[in-house]
Image 1 (cartoon, rainbow, N blue to C red):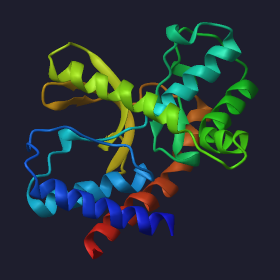
Image 2: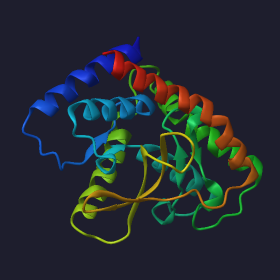
Image 3: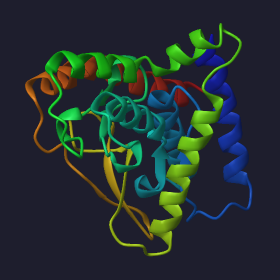
Image 4: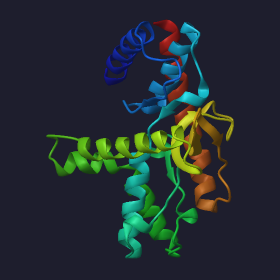
Length: 228
């Protein structure tokens, strides 16, 4: 029911957007869940209107990065402002894959700790809902994450060099048509979709485990858009 309702609303919003005076050069940051499906839907809507530009459509997954950085910093006892942790895959459950092996600064955490931090990053939204006893969700942290990504896009548009953030975009990093990874931003949106670099065995297994669920979500979005 949540999927169906949100998809219908998204389709309506994007039809209005395409009929409005919004410039075709605008960057579009999708933050409405389920991002794994709403981004493919948006892509299909733009394609139907003849205005799709893969370099200008982003799924905002920054909240996963914020959580991974925070949990890593707490465990490593370092300042979160000094931490960077890439998060790849998608933006729901097991499709969220933090790459703690690539985290900086290096903390050499035990594999058991990495597994716990990975699970906590994946379940971060549920943890917030439970902490609020079902009376709210992670609205403020989502707003914070959205602001971080929007600021990164503005920096790219203004020509600031080497602006890199993780985002769910059209991708050839894996066999999946959409995938979250590090993206370099410039004046035209995506300048480069960066690869995964070296992964630990745990991360390699996580990557293969997430693919079926992520593919199903992407396919569900595409199918919905084409049936609407």
